[in-house]
Amino acid sequence: MKHMATDSPVCPECGSEHTYELAGLHACSICGNEWDPTQMHNSGDTVVDAVGNPLQDGDAVIVVRDLPVKGSPGGIKAGTKVRNIRLIEPVDGHDIDCRIDGFGRMRLKSSVVKKA
Image (cartoon, rainbow, N blue to C red; front, side, top):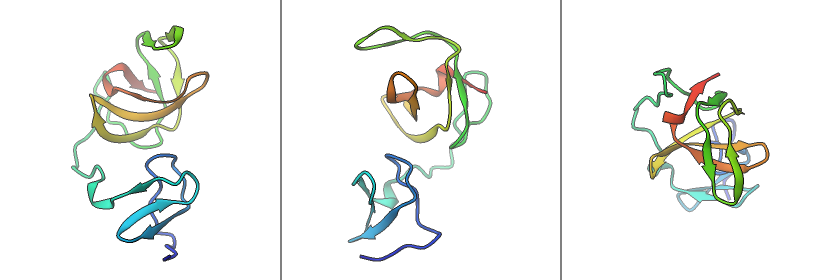
């Protein structure tokens, strides 16, 4: 096991800085996630919100319209503030990974949020 100093990447799953290199992959000691650093989202594309503001990891955003959530009668209401977002490689159009109070970890589309 190789200890990575201050240049170690954060875990794309949980955001932990406690990561290490393992057989050409990176691994997280907190959640156990393993990932290939060459497959990470580094395309240089700028992700923008619903009104055209560029988004970055760690930004806070506000949901601009009501969003249905399976298993939740009310869903996520417009105006809900989401802190500390993480931009990810798009999966079914969802390019933001976040944690929403009362709902937990989920993915959002940048087209339904605006920068706070």
